[in-house]
Image (cartoon, rainbow, N blue to C red; front, side, top):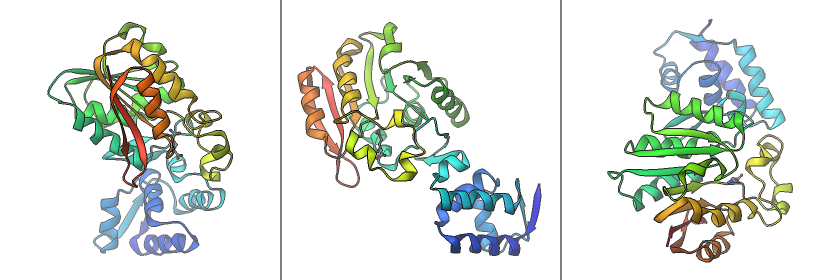
Length: 288
Ligand code: GLN
């Protein structure tokens, strides 16, 4: 345990922010590595605490902050955690950092479904587990399956579920998209995916913080970005029940093309829904 006076801590914090970055990122680091929650940080700010107890020294914390400022490593990878909706999720460079625009998927789905009914849902390519965990927690009557091709990602997702709940309505299966669901053919009521969809040219131009640190496997969708979305939509009819819903997140300009893919594969009620920036980000449809 490292104990410093509140005064020392506050001036240390000021010094860090003067170097660059924003309070939110610094607080995430202090919380995850230093063990000081936002609530405790506020008590220090209003001078209700004389001393600050930290899990690591200020010098060590500062070295992480410097790494963030000068190497473009995402703060979530340095701190090992990311906040997403009301969840605190463990992340590593094996998983995509869950994005704020993806948060809306949960409301969009809940709006289409009656959560009193039993349902079997699948989150394909779950990564950190963000979508599947939020759906399982918000709908205790549903049974969820989360798949991922990367075993290490799946372990992180499973830990995130255990650490954020005491429910057992979500299972984790290793494999490519639908492949692990052999035993669930024709039984899925709802499928969700945020697959890699970045087209080749865009991928090359991504900011360093994304391109050099986040897994290419979770971002890159081939020449036009649609390789994985095509695979998911084409195989969906094997696994979905009649009238099942499917929602896929896509790149800002792919909505119309993904809608055509849905229609070609016998989906009905197909719509492209906007994210909170007004971008047609989610394609949703019903299987027949
Ligand atoms: N929205 C993410 C980004 O812009 C991409 C996520 C994905 O490919 N599924 O970095």
